[in-house]
Image 1 (cartoon, protein in one colour):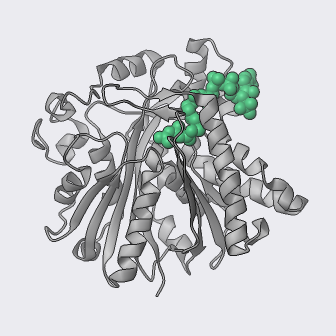
Image 2 (tube, rainbow, N blue to C red):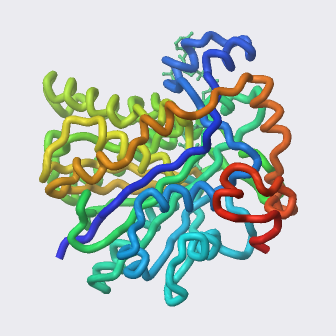
Image 3 (cartoon, helix red, strand yellow):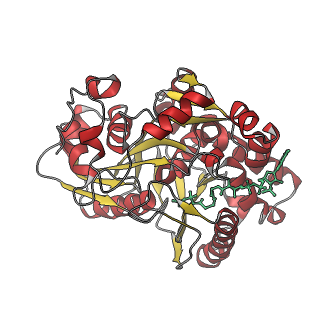
Length: 383
Ligand code: HMG
């Protein structure tokens, strides 16, 4: 029996900021943002959206009635949760109309938690053939106005259905992983923005990728030329290049050109959205699946990194007809339809957001507009 990703959907809120405009207002060279960091646009989150609305919207894009009947577990990965006790997965269960006889849980380990969810899902389905697991990875990446991290902000959610006989890709049981206590990025419970040593975080990411790539090769006997590309966790798109550059000398010039083109394909959507923490690596995967040069049976590497720090490297084997399944997701259309805001409007929205964990943001969110209205929510309904 093969187990893996049967469906994948993405959602990001409908407002966006042009980073060339942000660079001009901040007094930075636009090329630093668009080339040095590799980001062009970032999603701006209106204050009536949160990880639940984003996660549910991503899942709505892929779930059928049959999926709803077969889903027996929801894993919700986030580091931007809306409650310190209750899991976002319980809200998602209700809003998606899932059965009461399921497991619901929220996972946290910075940007890594979505991968833990995916691995739990794979193991569950392997033990319960015929059942499905919904994995949602949703976050709001928020660093603060005029901080070095500001250009890497973003938000959105990826939802994946894990099943047997998957339509997109089999998740191989070849994972290598590691954890190490590092103070590169964290967010204390009384802080609304992340604390970050950006250059340290970049170094730890690179080092963990290199360590795990060597371990992966030792344990599996695989070579770089056996992979048709990588989906990297992309806090900003240049990060993927920094990681891959470390091992590029393991293939010839043609191999390098191919891997660079596949990397560019994996960066298309993240460049337009920004960091979505837990979902970023899976948005890169969706981007590679839709924009890359791929064929059935090929193997992709996936590198997941979460500050703090934990990382995992594994491979996916593409299923027959994967391209038709991902073709149903119109990501480019969704991104093109976002409304652009000015820097002044972005700052106003940013300052109006209530993410203090001591406050219930839902009870203070303006009700009845946009998505809340679509979902039929009223302020405070989710208490
Ligand atoms: P910075 O100090 O403002 O930027 O912070 P810089 O001075 O390092 O410049 C960035 C790049 O732009 C450099 O290229 C410059 O040379 C280049 P690099 O040496 O890195 O290749 N540059 C230019 N290029 C073209 N034209 C120009 C120009 N000027 C400069 N005119 C930093 C950058 C990424 C550190 C900052 O944005 C930050 O702190 N970001 C947040 C942290 C982050 O994203 N870390 C990534 C790894 S950790 C991770 O992935 C986990 C995370 O997702 C959280 C989680 O797990 O939950 C963050």
